[in-house]
Image (tube, rainbow, N blue to C red):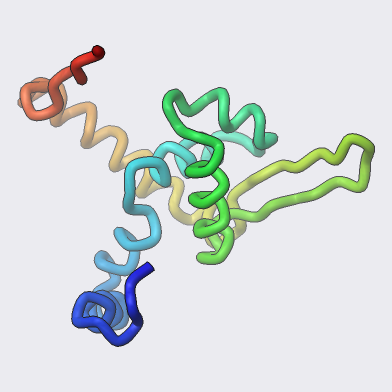
Length: 127
């Protein structure tokens, strides 16, 4: 966690307060948030379904990312009073407005892969 008085925190706040794109990227940025949002853009999902659908994400990271997205009011967590408890995640009304942006970003990423290839993103070496 970064100190709120640091230069980085100050600069982040400045960008978020003055640049819509910077704010959007701050909310959806990172390794796992785009995948989570894209999955939830298509359906309401239970935690286990979400975990299985995103290859490579750890439980700890999924929980952390879901909490941040919930704090940013783009997803909601629905807990059903059942035994065992059932928890689902879905986009909020505000989150659903990101649908066209998420689709456009996905389309652009595919176009980039088609035009440039995967040279910048080589396969990881497995030991």
